[in-house]
Structures are given as C-alpha cells and as structure tokens.
Image 1 (spheres, one colour):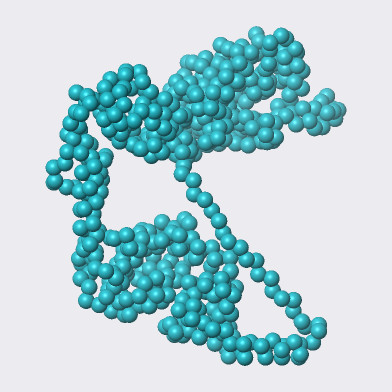
Image 2 (spheres, one colour):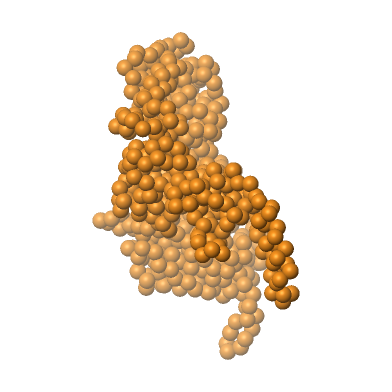
Length: 551
C-alpha cells in the first residue's frame, strides 16, 4: 500500500523547508533508511531518510522549492500502483488555483484540466480591457488614498494621462495611465483608502460589460501595480527633483509634464521647455517627447546671443549632471534567514528589553590564559573564559536563568549556555549542555567542535535546542561594545566586545591596562534591573579573578 511522505519538522522552530536536492528519482527503488533528499530548514541542511520501502511513485516538491511542514513531499508504494486517490486527497496542496469536477487518474491530467479552466476564465475579459490596481508607489507603501481623480467615468484616456493623485505613506504622487481607452469604472473613490493591488479603475472600449470584467479572472495582461515601473519611477523622481517639478519659463508660464514623459526626456537629453504638450491643459505626455524634433533655429541663436552679451564675470560654468543606471538584485531568503527575522522580531517586540553595561579589567584574565595555554594540548580562548564565568554567575543568580511563560515563570535548575556562531546564511546558536559542570578546556573543545560543524550545516537540531542563556561575542571583529536581541525563550543575553589596551587608574596612578566592555540585555518581565546588575558584578568578579572559577 502506498505511503504518503510529508515535509518533516526537522527542528523545533521549523515551519517550512526547502528541498535542496533530491537523491532519488521517480521510479527508483527505496529501502528503509535510504536518503531521499537533502532538506534546508531554518537552522541547517539535513539529510532526510525514508522510513518506508517500495518505489518512489511521486515527488510533490521540486528541487529549490519550499513548502510548509506537512505538505506532500513524496509517495512511496508498489511499482505501477494507482495513487490518484492519494493525489486527489492532497488536492488542496497540489492545486490551489481552481476546483474541477473532472475525474483524473494522473497528476499530469489534473494540471492540464487546471490550465484549461484558467484559460476559460481568463478569456471572459474582452480584448483591450485593462484592470488598473492600486500601485505600490514607494518601497514601504502598503496602502494608498485617492486624494483626487483627474478623470471621471466616461472620459477618454490617453497613454500618459494622469488618472489620479494618490497619497502614499511618504508623499502625494500623480499616477498616470499606461493605456488608452475609456475610463469605464472607478473602484476607489476620492478620500478612500485601499491596500496595494486593490482594483483602482478599469479602462477599455466604450460599452464594455464592467461587472463581467470585475467578476472574471484577470488575464496576464491585467495591470497589477507593476513594481518594476514604480521602482524605476520613484527613485528618478526623488533624485532629480529640479528636473521633475514644473519649470518656469521666460513667458511666466509653467511646464506640466507626466512622469513617464519626463523620464524619457531625461534619457534623451531633451529640454522640456522646448516641447509642446498635447495633453490636458498643455501637459507634455509620452507621445510629445517621442515625436519631438529639436529646432536648431531656436536653440543656436540663443546660445550665440548669450555668449556675446554676457560679461565674463557672469559666465556660469556648465551644469554637470550625474548620469547612471540603478542596479539591484533580489535574492530569495533562505529558511534560516526567514526564521531568524521572525524569531528576533517576536523577541524584540514582545519582550521589554533593557540593557546594562560594565567594563572589566582583563589583566589577570590575560595572564591566566597564557599560563593555561602553556600546558600541553591545551587551548583556551577569552570567549571560553566568558562562557565559564557566565555559567558560574547563573548558579548564584537563578533569576537570570529563567523563561517567561505568561502566567508562570520557569526557573531552570540546569544551565545550558548557547554560543552565537555566524554562518553564511545568518546566525545559529549551538548549546553547551550543563555548562557549569564543564572545565575551561572542555568548554574550549566543545565550542570549537560545535562552531566548526555549524559553519558547514552539520549540527543536529538537538545541539541547537534548550539554551537557558546566550553569549554573543564580536570582540574578534574589533567591536568595542554592542547590544543584542534576547534569544527566546531566554531571559538574557550577554554581548562581549574586544579587549582594549588603554590608560586606566589603579591605586591612584595612571597605568596601562587592558579592559573589555560587556553588556547584558534583559527581559524586564523576569529580570529586574537590580538582579541584572548583581549578575554583572558577579560575572566581573569571576573574569577579573579567573582562579575563583577553578574552585
């Protein structure tokens, strides 16, 4: 009997996964324990093995595609087995586009019927009819307000005409039409606000059945707030304000120009003051710029006269315009990056953070480290000493070793210190279990092993779970001091800066010393200011007197 294999939950925080690579193809024989695929989670890329035997009959998620946990990943069964009932049972996952009552025996036929159904729906929109949607006129815009309509239903619209003035989160901007026809419908009235991609207007031939158009599925030609156009237009308007706004000319009149025409004129080097507009109220539109032919008789005499009559002291240097092309690249976020963003946002905006900072005298720690590392086969870093000191301080201040659970506060009797490690895709936090029971050399060996495997994505989920406190160290990058966002469900995280040699005062004398700044981010729901301060005092005592950590 065929078995459905769903996208597994390979970590406690995983909500979706990406198939990095399939190691089996449809038709291959599968044994229990065979590796089916490599799956990228929010924390690592892991091998996923089969718990079933048989033939790989179906692959539900292609390489490079992501899907939520429990989505159909594959089907394993007997060779030639009919799996249509299993595919139909997962119809919501396989095909969210349309519903069909046609019986199908293969997934290929299901997709074919879907395409046919979509084409039938799309064909209901008459040729030449365009649905205009609320455009995204800035990078942060999520909704817009129609400040004014410059056209009304029934008006003829030419390409480049201004349809409306739309108020975004940053400014009120003119929105021009990219199509010609009659304005058949206005979906958002003046003063009303709507989300990006809501129907703004419909343009098409006179007599079109607008209700049928609005109820049908838009075709591929439908305008859906072209991000590409607005991204090109908005920066151009922002960076060339002197050229984009209406300009006074000698006659006292003003030049009105559509954004698209202005953009084309800038690219072609056309002086808009010499272009005659054919749009509303003499506005210069796209066709005016495209059809413009410069007149040498007008330009040349003006230049000659100016050269002859202007005194030498008044000659102005030619204006230098910076010309370039904007470039950008959109890279698909990895599962790790998306989960980091989600978790840190939740932590920052739900846990009331506050920060405490102290400076630690590291002279004794530096001397102790030299002696420890002089022993055979021993290598201890300053970070290892910080991790050990944190574990010892947590034993003395259990309030910091807690988790907020809403109606209760969890006091952890064990101490598991997470150590933040930077990897290519973001940040992972391998965990040292029972850190207070480990020696400095054990901590050093464990951190080196975990960090190395973290960078090649070979950590297991169990090695990244269960921390009760976290240490983040950027001292190796020369960072003097910084603050971190708490790694939930911890109540605190320690940020460690670099060791700096500088003048310090000891016994009333100015001498050369070595200091290190550390900051503690605390969740005020569980750790009060005085408690955090006492924890840092104890931590400083351990670091300034490392021998006390060996007791």
